[in-house]
Length: 122
Image (cartoon, rainbow, N blue to C red; front, side, top):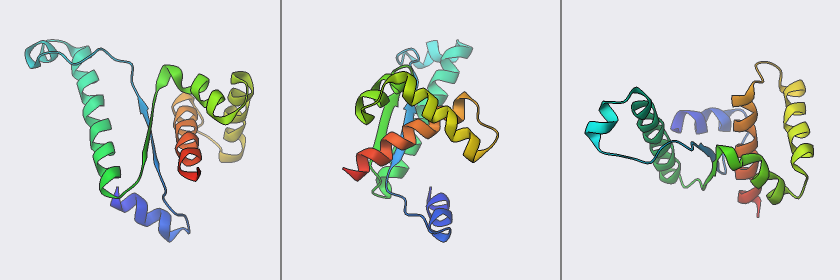
């Protein structure tokens, strides 16, 4: 996290928040059940990754904006005051300026970052 913050600062950007996309995976279970299931191992790995990013962001006093993936566009539309379809067009259009790759992962990351920035600006 420190390296990313330093690199952004060197490029003239301030880091003001962190957007974090939450999975909608299954709830935590016992360690034995998790280790017995390939899918649950990946779910736990994702939770660990998100926990590390949350703790690192908090360490650097960055507010963390968390949004569940399946709710991202509807919550984004509500918070930004636009229709879901319009928001989807805006996010898709960002890819023209940014360039490839601009797949679903990049679109979702951009939107959760946008919501984090909007919340930090309030």
